[in-house]
Image (cartoon, rainbow, N blue to C red; front, side):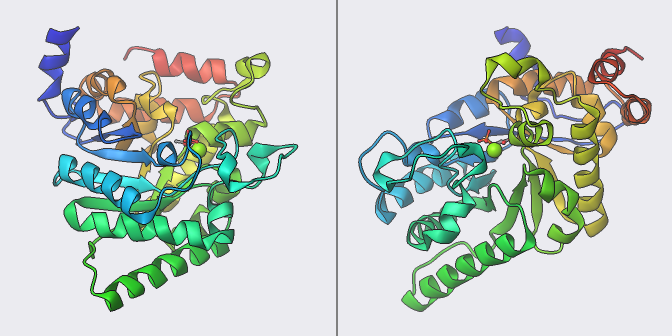
Length: 321
Ligand code: PEP
Ligand code: MG
């Protein structure tokens, strides 16, 4: 595998007919960056920041968080890194927050919902990220957005933090772009409205599939129903990409579907040009990109549009032109 990997690491992710595709990685901590570079990732499409908050007795303070993000900034250099604000709650528990037990944690108090309520926690994270962004090329994104009002509220807190830092004379990166995860079906449906509020979208298929199909992503008994090729999921994804293009904002994907080689051509055909995945998946996806043409990819998308089952769509995706 290593000769194969090496041969792919330094070539670019360009289709046979010359369309450049951005391949990024999902990471959780600074050490993960080594693997990203080894596999030829151009940067980080998703930094999950939960690791900083889990498996401990108290909240990490601003300095601890700053150190963590700064390490990533210094290691990544000019490469882009998209930092996602905390996505605790759901399956990811942090006992020191004293969160109540919930009947349906995945539909409950989590991620941006906690942050907009506990702005003390949110602001501390934003201060640390902004300060570290002076050392690298950071973007920031908010998870689990379901409405325009949530985006506005999150952006207002970000703006407040920027103002405070400026007043204190603390340096921070001025260029940082602001985006949101599209992982709740409501967000996909109102993508046209959300696109007016942000610089970019990142489609989180792990949760988007779970919520669209009402299938728990962790439950083995319904695992067969959890399917990214379901026409409902694909319609939502296509819609988000189309609305992002219409509004002229960047759109990427950071859910597992981005690292599924069977989905690459279909997603390219929908117009997706930025994929973020586990670092180890990058060479395989790069190979897919290099072996296809945009014309083939668009044909696959056209063919898939009329089909009514995930299995048929998957078969079209696996067909060789
Ligand atoms: C997603 O939901 O697709 C995603 C990338 O986020 P997470 O897997 O951390 O929920
Ligand atoms: Mg998610």
